[in-house]
Image (cartoon, rainbow, N blue to C red; front, side, top):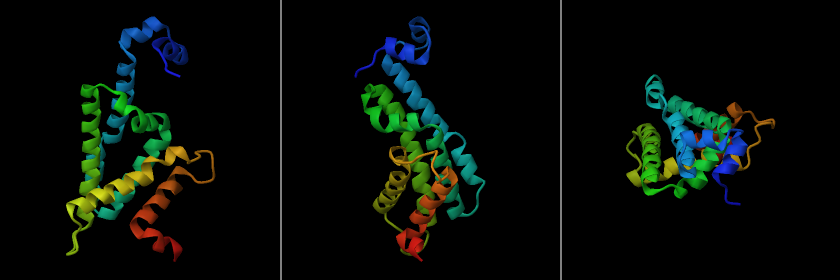
Length: 171
């Protein structure tokens, strides 16, 4: 069902006038949600990573932070994945730029982990980055915050599988 400002105001338990005071359109609301979510994802990320010396510890920190952000903001995360294409070109570009910044931080982190002679190509780092995002970004579709696997345990499992592969998990 397509929603309108009246439905949004009712769901938010505010008057339509109050809603229009802050937002002119539904798109403005969507952009606000997505922009704030990406700001949370980026907030202090580079500074926090710089405080960590070991590359694998940085990766562990990133995964834990990403999972925690997701489980605490599951509606916003899901909205980002599914609704950003509903934005106008200008708003879409603003969100895409924040996503590129986030992606860049993670791809640099992964590239820096691979300093040996068999260093992966740029394309391989891209694949590695999106594989990690794939593991982390779709947890909203199956993860049960009330289940026995805590967010900390979930991020630990993702980190172990990602860094050691399935072989490491089977030993």
